[in-house]
Length: 143
Image (cartoon, rainbow, N blue to C red; front, side):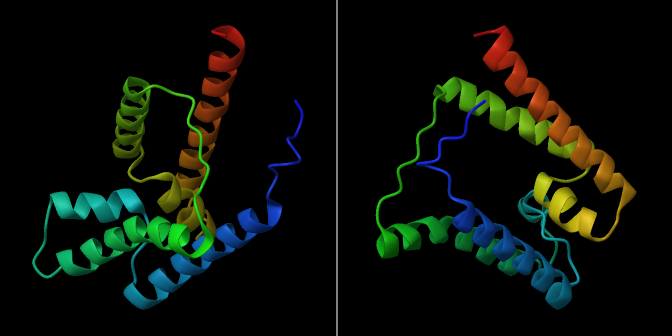
């Protein structure tokens, strides 16, 4: 394996990780809730009285951030080497895994591990192991 040094961006990755950690900590301190996207989105599917406004605001912020980035910094050059059916299948599998594990990677890996949750450790190891296995199978066995 080689690193593509021309596209290696450690500072932006570090800044992004720090912002996610800061957002998760502030969300927990200010709302007493775990910052997990699947829980926030899932709460809209099972609405509770007075609980929708902050969830919708959060999700709108997630959708607005890339647009603001593009306006301030310029066009992003993302490349996805997968077909739409593959992307849809992957999304459904992630949703299935999220429902089985009782949370998403953000909720377990960022928030759960920082709270020393054994359940989140098992979930994170499962996410990572499944990801490693999938990449190995797709790139080395099916290629």
